[in-house]
Image 1 (cartoon, rainbow, N blue to C red):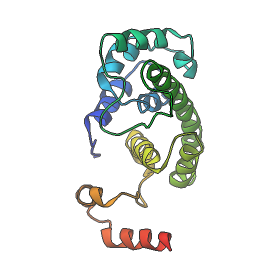
Image 2 (image 1 turned 90 degrees about the horizontal axis):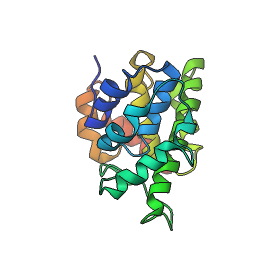
Image 3 (image 1 turned 135 degrees about the vertical axis):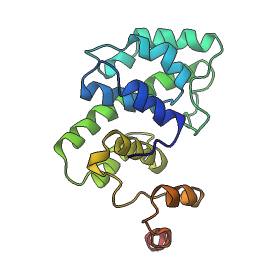
Image 4 (image 1 turned 180 degrees about the vertical axis):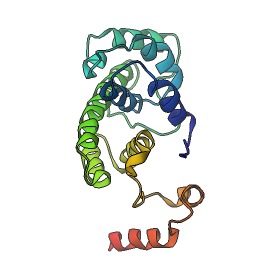
Length: 196
């Protein structure tokens, strides 16, 4: 069995994973969701309109998605979860925030397309995926971890996180509960060695 760790992962597994799309399209959508992780937005603006064939262009400038996003924001709805910060660049506040979120969806859809190809090929998935995720603009270690966990949950049989997953001290108790056989002390020692 596998543990889905939050409402957003549950949404991915119960709503996005079950869409009538190809496996590659579902994974692309899964990653696009991570651009905002705002479930009500996706239920209103994305899910009803996703149908095969679908590609990152679904989220591109001038797309109906962008028009729906503008209207959704105009109605006073949130465009991004409060579960984590997305740190928009300078000038992406106010009305420009809609474009930032839409661009982020398109970028994350492209990450999903690339990740699907990596998973399909196999190999050392943890390091390869982590490197891939961090190669995209504005994807740092924290967002890479989110995407690694999502990919691990999406394909549990691949054991992507079998060798561990760096987590901060705030996640130690949860990590120890979910993975009781992993040594938290050894992980801390590993982090200290990386700092030297």
